[in-house]
Image (cartoon, rainbow, N blue to C red; front, top):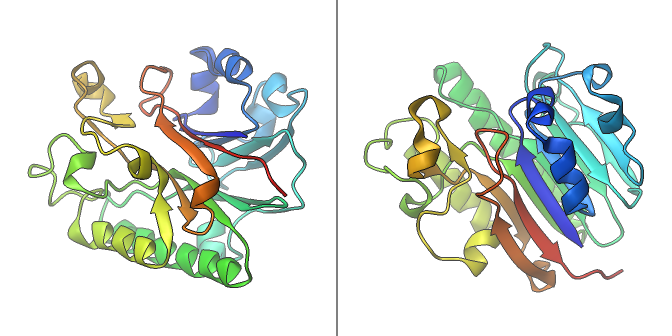
Length: 256
């Protein structure tokens, strides 16, 4: 089973740059998109009714902002949009799909760069998510989490750690939360397989950073450690264009 995740920075813009053709070629079992910036009715018909896929959109109340979408060949047992907390749910950042062998979180985590209020919102969102995931894990469910976390974890995960040490996305408090997340029994699948530097998933387009690979790794797949043996591969698709992010993915063995 192949699961892919991509912050497309606008699904309509990405579609004009080849999103749907890439999707058809890759034919993942599950595709999770973040920052779609559109209501379902604003999306081309072939991305609303893609043959062979069950499709779920969760758009923000604010137009042209945030939003996530999940495409799955297998019909989920259950689907939830959000955590049931209004201040988070209005931004359309979460789709939770339950399958027989795992529960998948597709999440576009908040960005904290704007001001202290948004940083506090981001950290509160982080804690709310962790409590939600931990409760499911305590029930014996396996957890797969993918999306744009908007935080680079370690110095290896961005090109210029010293210059960004006081910027949201690499603040000590944000990095410490990822430490806490890992301490709760979750594993960064990419780093489980790949310890190499210069592996990034986001680049500042305004400065031409992608051509120079001056980037950040802020998109992740995490799983609970009990599920890790079923993950056979984790990867970053740095050559795929169409957004300021590139897709990431995992391959898991199919089991019931």
